[in-house]
Image (tube, rainbow, N blue to C red; front, side, top):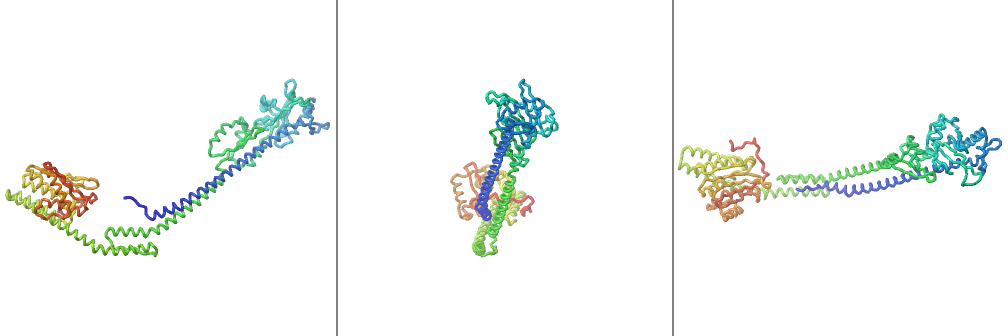
Length: 609
């Protein structure tokens, strides 16, 4: 049976589909759109911050570029006071031409002046290239006056072949300034080559030396701290060779970070923003932790979804509550209808409201009262008429059965007499007890077959064991069947099948489940019937006349009676069907419903007492 949705479920589904579902979809789309735009704004702000950092980096490097040029404008007067004289490019050449003591003193004064121009400059160095190919190094540091390791200094200040002839500012990778006593921190070195420009012959300026300015990383750190204060966000400044100049991760400063950046690109939990400073070829890259930068956005999203969930739960609970109040009277009405289906018409519904449901309850109560009157007047009368007809059928079959059995005993007594007649009378007594000893019309199938066995025994007493009976009902022996439905068919098999053939016969009883029903087959190997005789019997069984009262058709009383009783008890689709072939035998099938309750093994029956 197809399962139908109740009014309660329909009402709830309507509220969910028409109210909750569109509201939830609309709210979700609005929230997602808002969060998406908010996400774009935050990302854009960080992109602008990265761009501003790159601009700040350029400004810092430009300032050091200007500082590195000051030697061209440096001069020292007779009072040993340092000042600037613009356009006088021979001053450095003159200093380098001084005697060693004077030269060292003036060089120290010049280097100290350069360091004083910016608070982030830790040390200033000048490497003089002498005519004989030798080099002379000058160092000045406000933090430490003693150079620890000249070789370490020269190793840190190695220039490429292209850089050795460059006239622009040179940016050396970040390194440790451990060549000074008491120093071991990262610095960036700004370098510039100085040429003799006194003759203004641009193509042949001799190289006088190279200036190196050590700048601590605080000059870069202050730029990035202004925009990115969260330690979860990683900052990298690197050149085209992926050498890291600065990072808030101290371990990667000065190292090749190409592999690290390649791994970061595959990390979906972070956002990478970068901007390249074109003048000095440095790239600023910021690795943002999505959980950190969107933490506020995530909290807002959770709050919105919680509010939406609470709204959905509230509306759903309200719809369930009101739908239950609406459907409860209808469910009560359905339950009362179930009572009416069982035959209890004395049912009334409480009328608790004046709306349509209350009006429906009043109409239901009125219908119940009218239906009870109708049943009392019509249905009960019809049932009593049917019971009378079934009683009439049973009254036909019982005398008919007794008459035939007594006739067998009379003929046996006339021939033999004695002890066999006593056994036959005992068998007859068991059959009479079976017929009239129990008021119930339903018996287990095994009791039916027991009576058939006693009947065949009586027949064999009369005809000298010419009938063999085979019964196969082991699986369904407890099946409840109408009383006395097998004996009339077995009797018919003997009288109209085996007896006319004048030979030993076999009768077989089988039972099986078939197409959801129970089929009991009575099979004999008697004379069988012609097709016309079979059709005549089928027409007789299909007739509406109950039983057969014509004495000329006495041979069909038994099977017609059985067919009519089964049809009255279970419906038109049940009853007997006959299959027969002349000289081969006959099969009578008894079809009854499979839903008949089976008797329990421990139940006792009145017939067995």
